[in-house]
Amino acid sequence: MITLDRFILEEERQHPDATGELSMLLMRFGVAGKRIAWELSVGGLKSGLGSAGATNVQGEEQKTLDVLANEILLETFDYGGLVSIAASEEMAEPYIYERNAEKGRYAILFDPVDGSSNIAVNGTLGTIFSVRRRGKGAADLLGSGRAQVAAGYILFGPATLLVYTCGEAVRLFTLEPSIGEFLLTSSAVRTPKRGKGYAVNEGRAGGWAAQTRAFVEHLKTSDRATGRPYATRYSGSLVADFHRILLEGGIYLYPASADRETGKLRVLYECHPLAFVAEHAGAAATTGRGPVLDVVPGSLHERIPFAIGSAEEIALYERFLRGQASS
Ligand code: AFP
Image 1 (cartoon, rainbow, N blue to C red):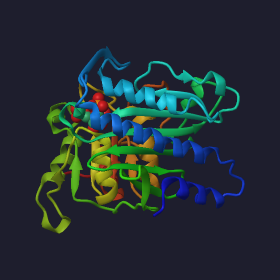
Image 2: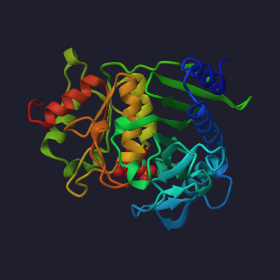
Image 3: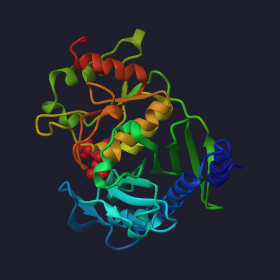
Image 4: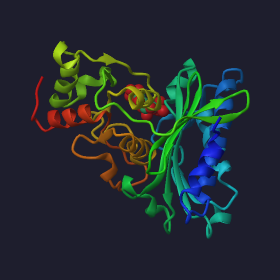
């Protein structure tokens, strides 16, 4: 039985110059994940499961659990002197940890509850996180995805999973509720080069570029030799859809559309961290024009068109967008 803490501490020993701070920080994401999992599991029993009445910085309605999860994450890193600044999809401005301001070597970014429309229907949800070296202020959060030190997500499904990478292999842990510990499930998750499924909100196809429509049409067109048609799997939770793809291959898309020219997903809280995980599992993520990890956002809440998945499907999608392939 290899617990999260044991695994992280043993890994740390492989790096003699490590200070142990990143290890502590990753363990704390495990603690936050357990607390959020608990709140989600009892959320339906409590009053106020629905809208908190407020809207987040993108004008989206906030649920009480979004607010709660955001608070849990902020509070988790309030002590220990590890983190000096936190940015969240739910906050217009970054949160500064005044008492860690000098010593906290890291900045964290997160989407506390991704797929929040699933809250009301008891569907799968996730928390996405990213760790960067702290800079001098909020502007330093706006680096390329390759500057991330670690990234991952917690998936709240039938089981609670923690997936992360520190720039080496992708680790997968499963929460064993009877002992309250995350146990190692895989120390090196690898995504198949090709999959059989695609995830996209096809209800929005009317607003897509012709090349995007042609690509999805291609996936849906029967051709035994190339394993088509693909199966559609779309849950409304990027973490849930990405996790399936991480394990089984395939592609998730949230492309640009006429009414959302930059797509929906946020660079810093969703796209960069999942792209970091994907690349370290042998998968890929693209804006359609190039790697997501190369994107340097101009502002904290910037969005980009996003596709993530198996290397072959991502390469094919880029060829479609460049007009080099057709259905
Ligand atoms: P919410 O957290 O606001 O529900 O958004 C979820 C999400 O960012 C991502 O997890 C989903 O894949 C995608 O948006 C769903 O968006 P659509 O409802 O437009 O398909």
